Length: 379
Image (cartoon, rainbow, N blue to C red; front, side, top):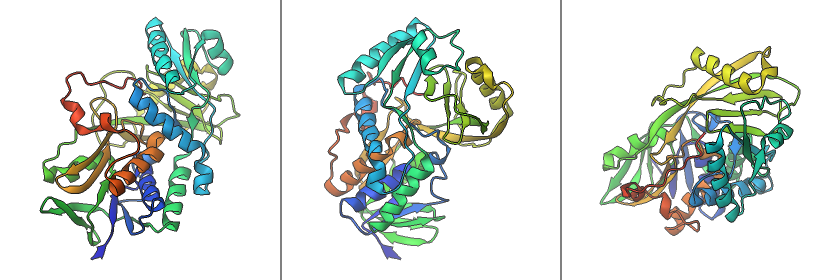
């Protein structure tokens, strides 16, 4: 049996960011538990996109704060996160898309996001290799970009360790222990750890850990698949996305990466198996936009899971019963891009009981509102 001031459940970008921020803000006896290797969950299966182009004001402010933190993360951690700001280009295929992006861009501009509407001709200039036949315009933010998830999580982990965190892998949490309305510890596959603060950032494993307290987390698993080609000469600079199921970019090594969907009802599953049907779908969508890739070889695929909330927005919550239980979940595919801010918010909830960032619209009680605002820029 050991004693910790706080135990973090989950070794992805959000958990490691929380370990970093807790120790940065002065807590030393911090234990992070990961049931597999670091970044083995959703973090290690994401595209690494970082953007502030969202539809709702609270989501824009949260994403912009995280993006600004990414800009200085390398110097903060002493570890290069390989963050490059080559821009995010949202493609519009009809007037309805354009109207949505114009509305979103106005709100984004009001809060400091430098997005702007672009014509079909400007889309072609931004991405010369693209087939723009079905495109009517788009929205572009040059400050958006992407980072390498393993570099980011390794940077958080190394700095957190240096600041005193104890990061333990291949140890699963079997139960969160509470008595008298307060957290008492966690039972793990390696024994008991006593603590009065548990931070649960375990993605789709979170609901199962909270059920014993009668806490229902309204999140569902949604599988997304990714396809990767052989390395090519650089020909795509911007992250190319749409609300019609396109997410495509080229890595630093030259690989072309595509995460696509067809807009139909998505399967709620925890399965990470790859499928041939996805390879067909992705190939079709990629070639529609980039016919120059017709003879390029696919080298691998993988699948991962979004922990999707009903409004596609994160949930941040500290509970009164049991007191000392803090939860961040429901990132809906945006956990990695928000990770620096997620860690800071959770650390402040543990240490101060409140966050310096306004999280009032991200609490569980919002789901009782019949006029729930839905975040529409989920890719």
